Image 1 (cartoon, rainbow, N blue to C red):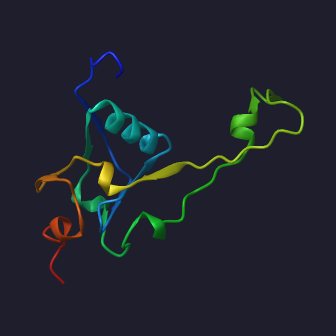
Image 2 (tube, helix red, strand yellow):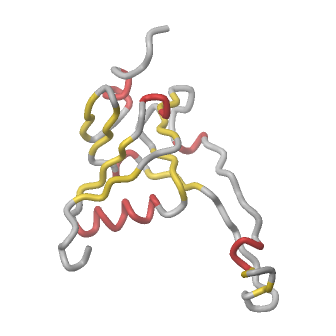
Amino acid sequence: MHKQRVQWVIVGADRVTANGDVINKIGTYNLAINCRHHGIKFMVAAPCSTLDFSLASGEAVEIEERGADEVLTLGGERIAAPGASAWNPAFDVTPAGLVDYLVTEQGVIGAPDVEKLAALRPPA
């Protein structure tokens, strides 16, 4: 990125909230921040089935946490310093403001937000 060899970063999503916040595997948020810093476009490609209009924003999502041993051990042997602990979330929330485009089977939405995503809401 710092050598300007990347023009786009495209990720998927496990869930997209009504305001366009993206819930995806851990590290997606950091990637989006790096894109913004380096002037690289950040795109999320996800089917409309990932849109969750019951959630106003990513703040409402309960993030799955995995066991600390996944990062404190390797092959059953502890690799972390004695007494070290770990927080091991499986997902993170990328704010909609860091998403340049959301691509679904219904089309492309630039700078997704509540109003733009409402057009993809299925009829009641």
